[in-house]
Amino acid sequence: MNIALIIAGGSGNRMGQDIPKQFIHVDNCPVIVHTMLAFQRHPDITAVAVVCLGGWETVLSSYAHQYNVSKLRWIFAGGINGQESISNGIYGLKKNGVKKDDLVLIHDAVRPLVSQSIISSNIAICKQYGYAITGIQCREAILESDDGFCSVTSIPRDKLIRTQTPQTFRLENIINVHEQAKSKGIINSVSSCTLLAELGGYEMHIVPGEERNIKITTTEDLEIFKVLRQTSKEDWLK
Image (cartoon, rainbow, N blue to C red; front, side, top):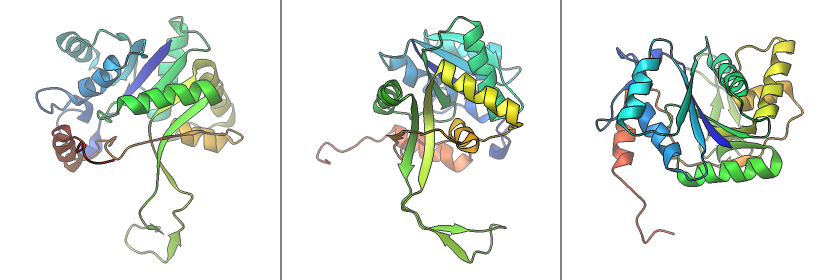
């Protein structure tokens, strides 16, 4: 099986709204539903699981029914941070009979514009190499700053990758990663790829991402999402 594990355990405090950002409506549809539908539409995705913020599980189930997200099979409890939420999800999958060789596409609930080609590439690269990390080569000049106001150092951008999601693993492999993290006291790595980097020794294979695959963190991101939903690539562009 190829399972989309959507991480929606955060409260979205940085957005500063009355409801979590993953449940904000855009074009009469919650952001998380836009995200689930991207995986619902992909023919190679067998099932969808969501790690959900506590108290919102019933709302999520209702939305899935309303918007015909028929692939939603499991809802797991969110954790105190992203690492714990992912851990809850992968152990929940194991407990529910998902096989160790099945692929798990770990994806942010607030990346609703993930494309079908990114999903396909994640599946293909993970099958070939064992790991797949969506990312984009950095185009901007990068400065290093301790306080966000002053900098005296630049960082060469040639080797820098801005990571996105999905980040895809065989279930057994990502569980082993989290077991190692527990043994080493790593409890708050910001993503699966940074957890692999902190542990060391893993060769992470990059899947080309897309600028459209934005992560909605601020109200400005919501406006960008609204605009991107109304646009598509011109036919004459290569």
